[in-house]
Image (tube, rainbow, N blue to C red; front, top):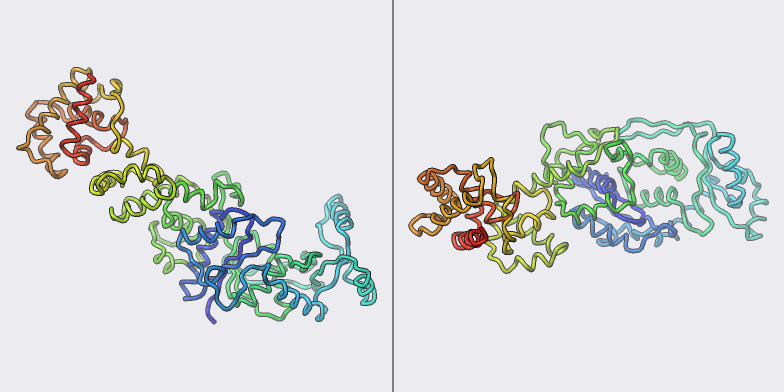
Length: 491
């Protein structure tokens, strides 16, 4: 049988970075087995529905390149893909459970259930339904139905038995049936609960493998009982560990700061994000850390997923992002950067678009090893595109570089300007610039730092920037002379 997996989120907010890792593991496992990865929206809890969250989810999956093989945007033959559009299906299958005496009507009011729960809590007992309505006679049930008493429908849990299932991450898990609550399957409003709908949908959509967070382990026995009640074959289960903060606290699922969209807005590359989170809980059994999506598909194994939670660190993800930037071909880097600028800083993109692409690529050549995320681009480059500010004497004077006064700054800048103005000297390539400047500085009986430190500051007016000769290469002869002359006038 072909492998079929699914991601079935509730539309209740942002796509969390933990959820993205669950999607990724599903995707890698499915593609490795030439299977089908599906998207289903579990929207029956209307009270928690957040407007726009479905669109956000689909946009995020598209942005990171994890496209479902079947779902709302690319339907196949297993739809509909919204649970709210499958209510007739749930009614059909709940009736089958009632007819088979595997479920029962519960007429308990919410007030009684609250009192029961409070009493159990006061006695330090597990909070469970006490099965009061399970043993109503058919006549008593019909009387309540005829009277229009609101009801839910609950699953009958077998007495004195054990519920077992195999987990690809944690091995065999067994839970006594006495520890399983007789869950509500159908609510008073006619909507199914998650536990009922997810089992029906997974079966009807031919889902063979369920890869999800380990917070669902306590619910899995309920799902196993439903599969058994319908006499359906169990899927394979794999419950992956959570993502944690450095202190061991679980990442909150609904805050913006750990949403995938927030990291995209910080200009993290999708491929770097996927690479990083793939390793949070999974051991590739190698010292390598950088993997393309294709390589991840080839190497990923559910059996190599850890049981313990993994620490999520944004700084560590930034390191992965920097590695991807550093190793990218320049035209590709510029195209990706333009995409991000157009989305998050279109004003700056418009400003720099008037400059030749060759000039921008020269800048990127120097920035590739300096940028960690694309949102650093503006701060690292504005001085290339705009006239520099007034001179800061405290910055351009540097005793460590043997530049101890503005008079020495002036002397050094005149040496640099003389070199630039000498048209007989070749200054077309970076190698030519380096060779020429070192030779001329030696002739002037100066130290390299004495000339190049003031030159670097004069060209950039920044405390940190590429070195002087790299800046001359980027700006070219004429622009470099213009900026140096401006500083000389200010001294």
